[in-house]
Amino acid sequence: MKKESLKEKVKSTGLKNTPLREEVLKIFTEARKALSSKDIIEKLGKKYDRVSIFRTISTFAENGVIHAIPTSSDYVVYSLCRDNCATAEHLDHHYHFFCRRCGNIFCLNDFEFYNIKLPRGYKAESVNILFEGVCKDCSQN
Amino acid sequence: MKKESLKEKVKSTGLKNTPLREEVLKIFTEARKALSSKDIIEKLGKKYDRVSIFRTISTFAENGVIHAIPTSSDYVVYSLCRDNCATAEHLDHHYHFFCRRCGNIFCLNDFEFYNIKLPRGYKAESVNILFEGVCKDCSQN
DNA sequence: ATCCTAAATGCAACTTTGTTGCAAATATAT
DNA sequence: ATATATTTGCAACAAAGTTGCATTTAGGAT
Ligand SMILES: [Mn+2]
Ligand SMILES: [Mn+2]
Ligand SMILES: [Zn+2]
Ligand SMILES: [Zn+2]
Image 1 (cartoon, each protein chain N blue to C red):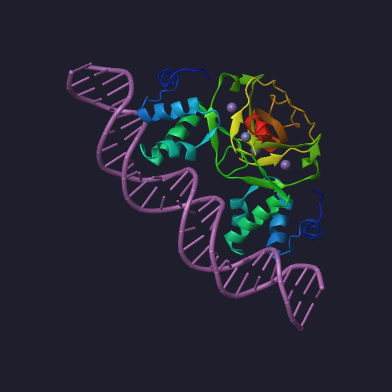
Image 2 (cartoon, rainbow over the protein chains, first blue to last red):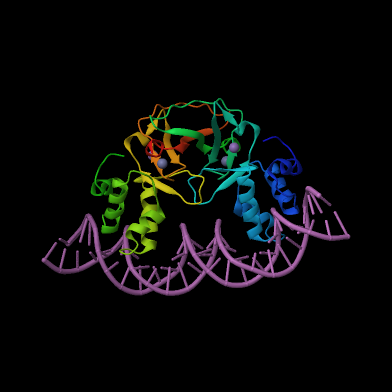
């Protein structure tokens, strides 16, 4: 996804441009890490109803504005879809890094894509690669 | 993890061998797919308290009997740790497949391991690779 | 075999997270 | 400006997981 405004995005998806959606999009745009629904509610929960925030996140995810990142936790985190989240050889691929120290999840962009072979019969449309370890910032301190 | 009985596992972890634990372990051993807490509670919830089941699953995960599998859903699924879940070149790696049709998650064993390079500063201790698509059974029918 | 003790379980209450139905508000096309 | 489909807020609900505590039990010691 290009760094386009929500207004531009609206044109392609049919979503209406509302104050809540602009604020949520702004938060994702400025975040250096993946965010959970809880994270967004903590930031906007006094200004907007939590139900609307949940619905905004769902709508964004359904329309390809953000994408859910697989984690081993019982909550989902989301991040803006970027250009290089796109397909390579018809396989949508995502690389993310979960830091054990700070607990944050980061998108790893500009990655060389490995076309890992699957067992016979399995047909993959996307692959999510989640590293776990210590992030750049945490390993310096 | 070897195909050892819980009794053997107890020796190494200090866990007590109880009826609930034996039943949970049996369910995981016989399952051909990854299971959620809900799945286990549906099978054992009339016989045991859900709290105890939650605690059993946590204990198993903490002691390396089972491992959590990253997904994009708001629930976690678990699978038995197998021998080849072990480390290769000091990087614990797991390959799983989420089927869009049946909704099941399968362990993909015996995989060639790719040592994917990380950006400078990031130190990975494990990597989880989650494919999404159509599984063997579902693509035949 | 019995006793002892730390660990495991069951139960009740609670919290967190997400969902549903519906009425009121509002963004956008005409 | 008006019309209308979409979005939002509110209340109620539901699912999933947690906490505290009393009771029970597994497994080692006697
Ligand atoms: Mn990403
Ligand atoms: Mn596995
Ligand atoms: Zn970190
Ligand atoms: Zn399937």
